[in-house]
Image (tube, rainbow, N blue to C red; front, top):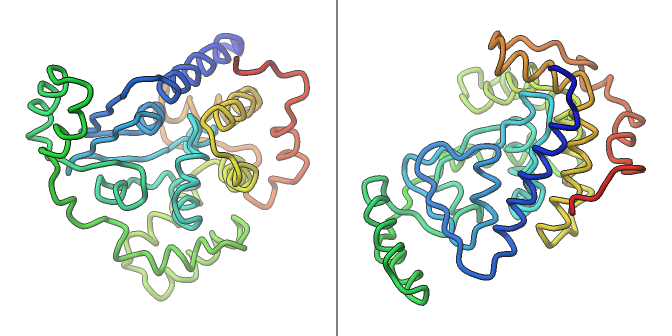
Amino acid sequence: MAGDYGAVDRFFQNEYLCDLAVAEFGKPVIALCDGLVMGGGAGLAEHASHIVMTEKTRFAMPESSIGLFPDAGASLFFGRCPLPVARLLGMTGHIINGADCLVLGLATTMTTSGQISKLESELLSCDAGMIDDVIEKHRVNPGKPSLDPFRQHIEHIFADDLLPEDIRDRAKNLMLVSPDNQLLQLIVTAFEERCPMSIKLFGRLLDVTARFTSPSESLALDFKLAMRMIRRPDFVEGIRAVIVDKDRAPKWIPSSLEDVDEAMLKFVFDDTDLPPLR
């Protein structure tokens, strides 16, 4: 809010370089994800070699609520999900559980919250060659993914060929006939309240990164997008509304998906004169 963009640039550069260090580290890196795993925490976890979740895991990339975008390599790890699910998670910040993550390739195993401390202790004392065996010993049945009852709706609403405006309208139309559907309510509310530019940017980001295979590609692009996005009024307004004043009433510019035009998106993806991540 003070306008010190250089400091914010350095913050994101350090964050993404940390993610990259985890991804490229030559030894096993184990993420124990017991509880909230969101934003930067999700980025750290998803670049680890072993991702252990529990029944208490709540996973999300909620950056569209602050005028940013799902970053930290999200286009890569959400890119492993079916496209309709990736769009749901990235555009709306929808929260999923550990079982969802396991099914979607966002986790490597599940244990219970009560076993996390014992698992950590055993991992810290075991030989590196025994890591998989130790984790396997604590593996449990993941239970039911929270998205399972809604997969048909998700595939219809977030179909491959739809623009964000079409996605929003499909969700609204479906809610007219299923007003008590909890997921539909969450999707409609998200499209009403979250940053239109962030929603549209993430849709474009999934297209641009469809062939990316390495964290270095994804994180390098995220850094340049972040430098563009933090200089837009939406980011400052989102931080104000969610973190500073906490009134949850941001005034987005533009205020609708229809008003986010091609020129705005092209400018954000234009990396002319921007420094590299490393």
